[in-house]
Length: 159
Image 1 (cartoon, rainbow, N blue to C red):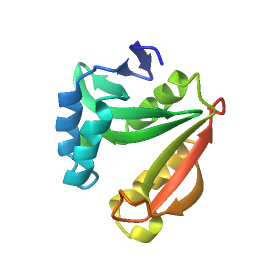
Image 2: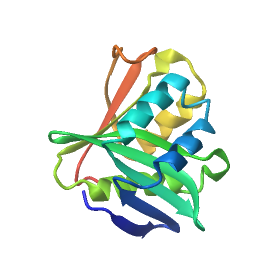
Image 3: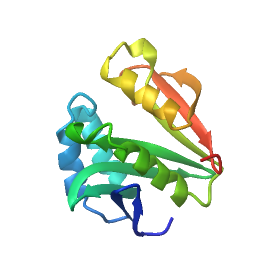
Image 4: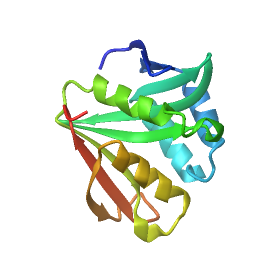
């Protein structure tokens, strides 16, 4: 996946293996409803060897995505948008940027809390990914998760 900058909608998205990891982590810490301390620790580890996308509005970091390549599947491992910037197309711009960057994979997956977890903030997260064209492929309880996990998928080239 190439590094670079480009505009999706009105948001500048930076793609890099070295973009502002500390800024991404600081932004994630501002979203405790979505990222637990355990999740933040895992995110920091994942950022070290993943592709990062940073969304900026007028130079200010307002969102991020973290991608992990696993063979012919790319997982959108982490996605976050600062609360006051939500519902402005930034999450959609990040997902579009993710899908445009994937050239060596057949599928993009994302995992989120399953409906059974009964945690209200993630109802919006699931709805967002469904609107973005991802389809549910199943639920599981991975050993590294505290709650049931819903895996969603989108074939590459559908966007």
